[in-house]
Amino acid sequence: MFSIDNLKKSILKNDKKMKLVFPEGQEPKIVEVANKLQEEGLANVIMLFDAESEIANNIHKDIKTVVVKGNPNQEMVDQILEIRKGRLEKDEAIELVQKRNYYGAMLIYLGRADGMVCGLTYTTADTLRPALQIIKTAENYSIASSVFIMTRGEEQLFFTDCALNVEPNPKHLADIAYMAAEFAEQMDVKNVEVALLSYSTVGSGSGPSVENVAKAVDRLKGMENGKYIFDGEMQFDSAYEKSVRDKKYPNSRLTKARPDVYVFPELNAGNIGYKIAQRMAGFEAAGPFILGLNKPVNDLSRGATLEDIYNTSVVTIYQAIQKGTK
Image (cartoon, rainbow, N blue to C red; front, side, top):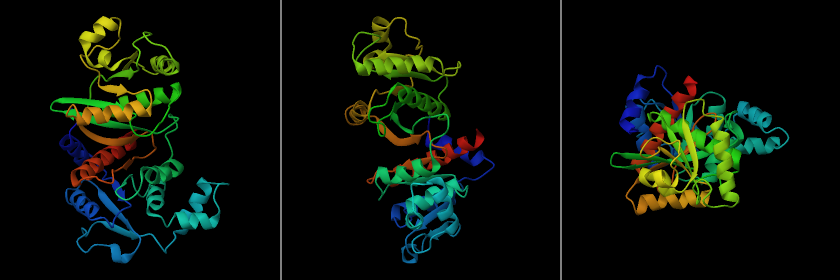
């Protein structure tokens, strides 16, 4: 079962210490979390600022601080022009590398950082745009996606995609499901089982959304390689309650009482679903964690607590280690 303490133990066993960049170094919450990460030996932290005057005097002595504005990095300018060839003028590139979110993404691209946590002051779009433009999605995936870890006591589920993709097509939906299965496995779930959700259980309903999910399941059956089990389409009660599944879908390939990962057919369902579980059923929602990028970048809520920021940072460091071992 996923726990921050278990992730920390794994991180501390790793031979190489990951470099984690915070583009919002001016934020007191970020300073507090960055200091804790550095003190605990979980990462080498890099903090970005617009001006020297923003650098707090209580920042840990081993944390690297960089003033981005007014000091365009020529190597980054040249690289971003190459990455965005034909879509960016030089003056635009000079402006972009003086933005902390882009500078952080460029540090990762150049191999000088391994992951980034951002979003206390940036919107989700401003956090993910440089990640998608510069770090980009891994070549085996067509999109980036997101996952929430939903925890209630000893029960732990993974909900995807509740934050990014509005109306995924069958290929995208299959990628979303597979990425979430990989993430669950990284979080120490054994024999991952995945349910693809719908308002239909294996043909009980019809419509374009049902067809999308059914096609995604067909694609996934060719991607399994004996590693994970995917099944659907199915209604949530069929997925979550084995007694219901046995009646509605007796030939289901799922073997666990409850599958580990729940794949929503589109963003409306996913976003509403995780918030219902959080507000009405008492689940704690950790995330969203971004999946499918070449290197990890995770987005914070602008109302994130110190615990939220710390936990997201630990997961990001762990994701960076996983990326490095592939």
